[in-house]
Image (tube, rainbow, N blue to C red; front, side, top):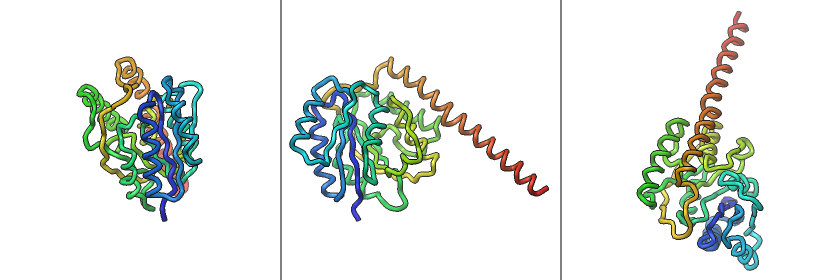
Length: 254
């Protein structure tokens, strides 16, 4: 049977690319699913993205929807809104800036099986300025190390996931830290991962919101807060439970 799929795109300063992303998503979904929807989460974008989306809604079927924030909620807030709006069995998202080809969703959909819950892309080659590539690589390996993440490319926002995952894990981040929060919580909850190589393209419209020194500094502070919560405190909880279980077994044996 063909899977039912919700696709959503975060949209902030993506007026030049978002319409093509929506059309390509609908074309792709018709090939791989009989039950689908496309959602764009407009995060109070200051360009004319909302006007373009409203025009699209006049000509596209009801399988296309817009979720619009009156105030900017950050990347994490957009991901949380997209997940909350999704209604199908599987949820896919990628950014609205067209640095990934949404048509490669077909590659991820081929991995769907009863033995897989979370399908993550990994960039075959990152197409960015050299400084962004080096910063991105350093950040990615640092995050993978401190959170003990098993996937190859935690920084690849090209993901297809079971909707049921979000009935178990709760996302809290309002910033870009939601990417590793999502992977870490899904991994710790025992969900099964698969990976697929995907292409990455040069940005043709707009500018990245993440790669400047002030944001990098703020992100590092958030990273260490999440490390304390998701690693240090969780290890303490595991140690306490192990000690408690050992004491219960000893009392029963005595």
